[in-house]
Length: 469
Image (tube, rainbow, N blue to C red; front, side, top):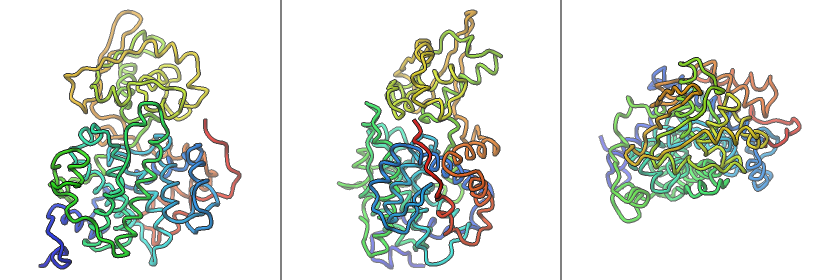
């Protein structure tokens, strides 16, 4: 049987072809029940994060820059714009409060879902719930596989690239390509074209810049543009994943990459199972330490009032990522491991409210910070989670390390916790009845005949609530 590449006259790229063919042909019947359930949970979670994100200053500033007069809805408002502007603006909302999932491309949901919401209204034929699930799944597959092929999170992000923006652009292109029913050759064109829109630097981390909040939106916009270009007849660079000058791997991680990761375990190693939901409104780098402190307090029957010192042994990579404390901005505080533990000590939880300006300026936070010590250890593996030691007033201490944080496959959030998080976040932007209806839509997603109406469930004509600060 002749491959799509042979028919198109393109050089053979076995691993890329295998991934493109798998995703392009992915059908609802191919998905195990656990993957359908997992995808629906990530969809619900991302919708909640995105709706809450409409309360951010960043979303509203970005929305003001969108071209007026289009037909594509913007979240939690009555305003509409062109599809690619909608993907950009809504993508900012999905990631801005650090409440979206991680562990995929890194933040796959905030990249893939805004692109799909922007593409859905223009689909000429009904899109079943099963096909929407397949499109989401394809995005998670491609985003994580590109990251793994780039040496993994540590190598790619350690080189200074924010993989949400770089690998995420390919994830959104893949999701839109599957939504539109592209064949494998066209699917590959969309993904390879997306490599030219990959961007996103970790430089934001040095001063609490808001630049990070734009990365998911730009990736959603770039992936949608790549899919549009492929449909219009543009060709992607056929050798972009080979060891060539200007290739993806040589450019981003300075080596030949591991292209075999594109096809490893297709249909059995589902990459959405690598992704994690986030119960805390902090950078994912802080989550295992939060869990460790909570576990120690629970196991010992102590409270935060009994704690005199919290010490962390952590990798230099995690120290560079989350070791700084810049509390003057929400973005800076959410990247601070120390602030997350201080908030846990003072407030007993690490939800979005604990990152408000009032919480960040609470005088008790300064005292809590004084009891936290971070100790980088060059012998720790780059991606190791921190080892946490809590010392109590009576001189006793307890040490713990959580290898996979709450929200991961190994330590999952309960369905009730996922729903409670969604209800809390979505109600920041929509009335209760609309929130309940949206949850019901997702719960029965595989039985929905046409999902093109989903973006309309996310709009609102209600007076706009104030910016969260």
